[in-house]
Length: 421
Image 1 (cartoon, rainbow, N blue to C red):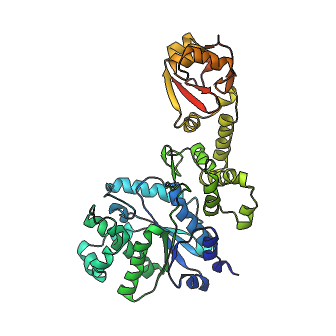
Image 2 (tube, rainbow, N blue to C red):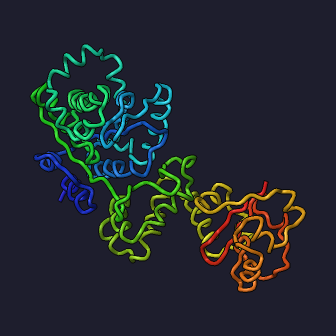
């Protein structure tokens, strides 16, 4: 079987195929095909949700085809209504251009832009829309689709009660023209995307048929949901981003490491580049670690992965106070995201605070001095991961991590990050 016959089969076993237009598989078996996926530049970073489409382009390229990433400099000025319950705020041109530049740099980490005939490329739809007049567009493009056709799309039907602007209503026509333009000028035969994009993608194939009598093809991937039905790509702190300034490598590593057993079986097929045989040989209790390692290395590099793994081991596998002090402040704060915080003045710490007062009055980890004394005597308190049993201990400046923090712990799971300022 040649590589070109493997793309659809690859998507199928990885649970990455939702809809496929008749004839698409046959097209892919004939020779190298140009295919594209659009990316929405609403943020200055792609998130883990975008990784599904990045992986689709990666598999497409590995199967011998030519992947094209379209960044929406034009469509980003309009706003995609797909999956949205309300009109979104539109970005300024400067903000949009900044986002586009950041996303391009991220895409270049994943796809091979220098491998001969099937080298990846990035296009910006602003390049062909910037000189297209409004009258020219509605005359030359808009006349080919009826309002009835456009209103039948789910992205429109789902918003009829709450209302949508003409701006968002026109989005499917603009995205459809993207496909037509790439088909006409570059010979792009296939558009891919998430299943929420099916209507917009099919609009493109319809425009190609109606405007030039041509044929083009489409496929989509399923939208990922966690096993409990909640949205994929979110942590307690919000979206999980590929940019280390938005989501630290440590938090990124932990996101995958904390996947449930039910979810990781699906995630590793979708996000790993391992073969089916390699994935099936991984012990069930190692799936999260393997996935977290592979993705952290691919997105942030080997060094960032090593740091994230080491920080994780120190924080959750009883690292000493000395080891805690070696963790970057950003990693410490990422690890303590969602943990109770307390603030104590630097002057009080420098003067020294008796441990029982510290636990019960200063940070309220225990409800009373009596309870604090009992927990200490029962070996249930740790300061900076070191067990404390001495009820006469005084907390002082020597206990500070990075001259600013103290990590207090009650039992196995109840933490308090003390910020000293």
